[in-house]
Structure formats: structure tokens, C-alpha cells
Length: 131
Image (cartoon, rainbow, N blue to C red; front, side, top):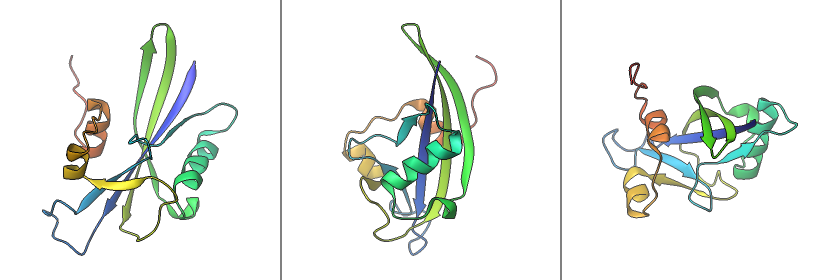
């Protein structure tokens, strides 16, 4: 079984009103994906650190990481356990090494399709208890 670690980084611009379309932005890699990595021989913390060091200029220790969600994915017999962490951060100019932060309207305009699993993590809605 593979273990995939995904990181959702949400940036808040406190200089604008909380109802502004630019108040919250989500980080996406150059490929318009949420940053993730398969944890092979590293621990979860080491894997998260490598994701942060690849994408951001900010020290890993500065980020307050929260375990957000977990799921098992079975793609044609290949089982992957995915752990999702979330980081909430104020807007910090020039904080990325690669990728970019996008507002919800920019995500939509770019044609980026987020899986409902990630949408729930971003919006904070709970998973359904009964299926």
C-alpha cells in the first residue's frame, strides 16, 4: 500500500473584507494540483517538510500543520492511503518558490477541477456520516 500525503495551504489577505473574492487563496503547484508526495522511506513529518521546502521560501517550522482528512483509494487494485494536512497562513508576499495562490474565482476561471474530497477539506464541511 502506498501512502500519499497532500498539503492544502490556505492564505488569508487580512487587508480586504472577509467577503472579498480575494480574501482566501489556495496554493497550487505549477501543474495546477495541490502539492502532494508519496511517503516512501520518510516519516510523515519529513514528507511534509520536503513538500514545504520544495514549494515555499518559509521555514517548515513556521507553518502550523493540522491533520484534516484521510481516505483509502483503490485504483484497479493499487491501494493508496491518502492523508491530507491543511495550513492556514496570512498572506505573505513572495513566499512561494514555485506554483501560485489562487482565489476561488481564479480556480474556477482556470478550469481547475477539485475533487469533492478536497473541496470538503477546503470549505470545512463535514463528511456525511451515513451513505
